[in-house]
Structure formats: structure tokens, C-alpha cells
Image: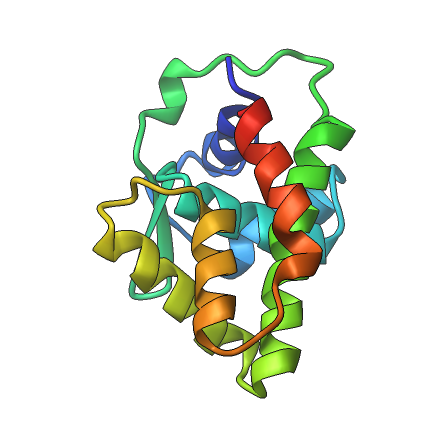
Length: 153
């Protein structure tokens, strides 16, 4: 089972709710489970949304799968590899925000919109890379990292 699915399922399994607020999702991962920092939780949420595992409507997150069918191993903890992937998108979004003088939420919206326009056929990092280029940012610093992520899946 994909560890990102475990991470996404955990807050919903803990709450027993079909949807939870963005704040509650991040809080659950950071403070309840103590798996990751709040910044990493936010980045993981963006990754999960970009990967199609979460949907957001009116500030509420809902999984696109049934969390009750997921059995999270008792000793599960997200691996460093998952966090490294997450940190790449976080770094890219922060960089684009600084480079373009736009707010981070605007960048996230542009990246999500770009990905949706392509029927979510590209990874979130690729969408961020292309949006950054479109906004005039020098994205060369991320090229190898994005390429490596694509080649390792």
C-alpha cells in the first residue's frame, strides 16, 4: 500500500468523519500523530490533493477513497523519502512565490488549475515547474530533482 494513502487516511480514520477542515487535517498529522511538522503537513496535503487522493471544497477535505478500507500498520511512520518528495514541492512553491512576488496561496491555486487543465495527467511538481517558468522564474535549479522524481515514480 502506498504510504501517502496511509498518511491521508489517518486523520479521517481518527476523526471518523467523511470530511474535515484543512486545519484539522494538518493538526492531526502534526500534533495528534506527531508524524511531521505543520509545514510538512501542509505540503503533504498539497501533494495528496495534487495526486488526487484528497479533494477540497469550501475549506473541507474529503478523501477520494474509503479510509475505512485502509489498514494502517501499527508502527507506521512516514518515511524520509515521502517527506523529501513533499519538501521538493514545498520548496518549489516557496521559490515561485518569492520569484513572482505572488502569495503562496495564489501559486498553489495556479499550479492546481494548471494540473486540472491537463486532466491531472502530470505530477504536481511538473505543474509547479511549468507554472514557475510561465511566471518568469528560473526553474533550472529544480530540473534534475523533478526529473529524478519522475524517473523513480
